[in-house]
Length: 440
Image (cartoon, rainbow, N blue to C red; front, side):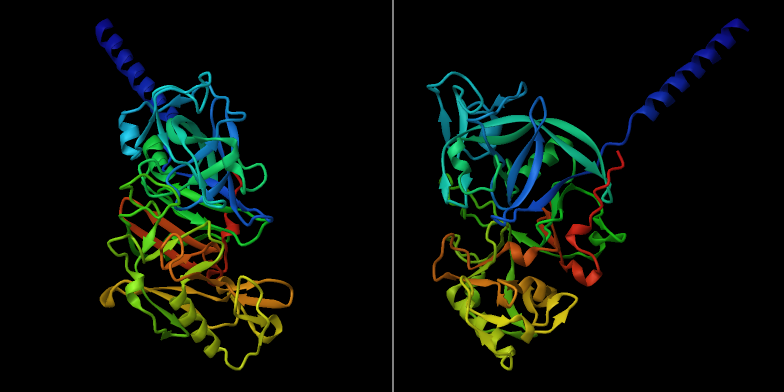
């Protein structure tokens, strides 16, 4: 009897212990987020990334296509968990670095260590690059269920690059580097997916206002915006393409592009296809042509012949509306009072980017709120600019930041596809409507 009671007591104790330990282990977050603001002075999109030990919120400019996160390590970088990436290591090789610093002349410090992997941090706003030590450190991100922020979670070993203080020129006030969301092994989305064990995809939703916040999601979650609208259910998908030739201002020989390209096959205005040389919309063997998305270019840039065809068709569709003197960098402008108003901005003809082949055609529609730019209180201009015949980098169509504001874009790196919503204003919400009230 004693043995039986003792056995049953032991079994009950073990059961309770297992139950308590299971109850104390919360489910691993499936997604994380960063809030995004628009700088009033530079129009750059900014975020604050908690990094280092002790944790510091590092203010960064977002660059959708840049290969990695880089920060100023020359001034004020202090962290007990900083680790340089050694030359010849797996991480160094997978970063596609072709450089190694065998000896740093200054005393050891973040950004200056011997036998370390070196890469090329790039500032697209001043078109300048330099050499920088590849490193790893702790990053903390706020978890989310897609509706609200949750608790902060930290992960070690997130790769980034060190840059000198001089590379901060041209960035917004107090910014300490660039958050590169590019499609590469050392790109921030892939680093987060590996470090936090979440899906290799992210979504970006930029606000048009400088007084509200947009959001970037990492991992797999719904995207719920007030008043309770799950935008993930409204996405239309199209393939993402890889340009085998780098389109960055600095790169190692043989490095592919880390920008996100999509397959635009034609452009429509008011439902009518505009006449363009469609071979410009495909990426050739030299990496020229095609369509990419950018958060660095403020407005969509077009190769000259495409730009001329688009503006000609747009002006023709508004033939009865008088134009006003253009305001640089734009060439087609109207008096605000001459154009009507709709839920999705000025009443102008929609511009459609037609994606895919004949059997799988999708359209990304750009409505007035994204096609027109208020240059002052009286004048609205068509927010597309002439990129030249062979502008740098040599992409024929670069979709700029103004055209993607209040659109949610999901970059599914693993499945090689882009999910896009077109304007959220049609659904009576916007990128400013994510509820940042924390449940943590």
